[in-house]
Length: 288
Image (cartoon, rainbow, N blue to C red; front, side, top):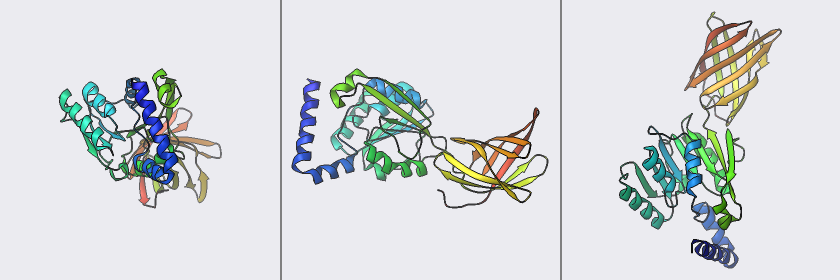
């Protein structure tokens, strides 16, 4: 019966596209795509990939029947809410939260995903079409706090490179989209490091650095005795940062943790020696 209903819905969508393509395109743009249930095995993998626990606040954009937030609240004791454009699905999700006794931790609301406040989320989940994903990337990047985890089902953000991905067989998906597998993408929201920094080592020496950033990728230079040295082997995962500075025969490997306008960490000086280092943002610049 479920298979028949899905085919009927799919047929109705195809007919709508043929009869009124502009209207259909506008509806897809508004909603992110037709409602397609997420199999429970995919939900479990998404929440596991994000390492959701009792301290997390999960926001699901395009929450459909609410299964992701409901599972997070009921099984993992997290809190959160779902954003969905369909009032009937929102009503069904809130009713299910009440039935499960978790309405204090799981709520759902009718809202445009572009207008949702994402700032509370420690975990964000999505199952939206590619064009919507790309248009949401800047909102997600700017509104979520560094270290927040983002997991998407099947589609990615385009230019924002993901930190991890997994693919696995999901036979029941074949009846929906003809592909019996799922791919999940994970992003760890990176700290915002673009700008001018003053690096200070434990021995009292200080250096100026300038960093450029595009999502999790960054580049830059460190000024050593009047020479701008390009940093190498850059790595930025959430609030953890690493890079290498090579000057002559010296190779220094910096590792640290970004907290707002400050970085603290340890620099490997080679030969078994290391030292503490800090960096303070010297001047805020427009993020790239």
